Image (tube, rainbow, N blue to C red; front, side, top):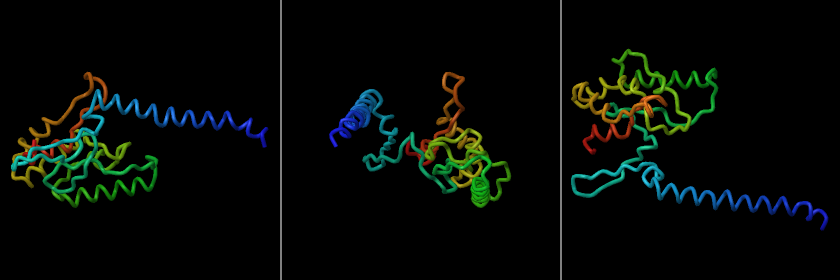
Length: 186
């Protein structure tokens, strides 16, 4: 028995040491640095608004997608992660169902639905849509709110970010911030 323990002891000790070091110490240090240097972003970019009665309320997170489905709102990407192959019949069926949902939401819109409105993001909680996906929804939002399409486009433009350093990534529109602005909360 002692011989077996002598062989296993370094492995067990190494496992425990690495678990404490990487699972607790490293995680605590990185979290502490993030909280000290980027507190708003480390907490998901919580958005707090001032209400008419003078109180304030947290209404969402700028960095985590919220689900909007009402016609008067900009609607983001579908929530939930799928690990389905792009050639999967199951993914094709999901996309067809989502296309049907969009057509039911706004039967008058016959334009092609941007792909990011019918496919999930890698994280499943992407807070952004493409400018094309936002533009696709302008007429519906304007009609539901009694606004002009140009007024809706102006709100969307306020919350559209370009490429990082002009070359990296794609332009995006933050869904939550657009909807809060449309509601007059920010």
